[in-house]
Image (cartoon, rainbow, N blue to C red; front, top):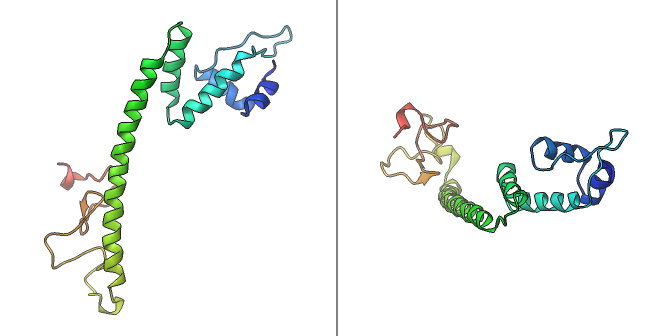
Length: 162
């Protein structure tokens, strides 16, 4: 089967198939006498697996490792189970972080709704985000609301490296 037919059958582009070959996810197919790629029928199944594994959140490196186990003649079930467990832990951690951020934003929204812009002190950048009279400010994403940390390196600066 030529690359165009395989691409249409698998619902991906020919460029994607060539990329998967270069990334080690698809084996290089034999070539016709005129140099065209000639994929076996099972190549479509492999492409379907790659698509499904990506939809489940696996990285290309993880997918490559699963395929390598299968290609060696062994069942990758234990490895896949470990990958799923790892991804579930990461997602649970991210969900907890998002819930904390949501709660902090809800507190800020209540403060914003109760704020009169005409009473904003000129020394404040924004009284919704800062609370100059309070030493115990609600946390937003793990930082104090009034924190001057505006970095994009995971919330750490020289002053916030601990």
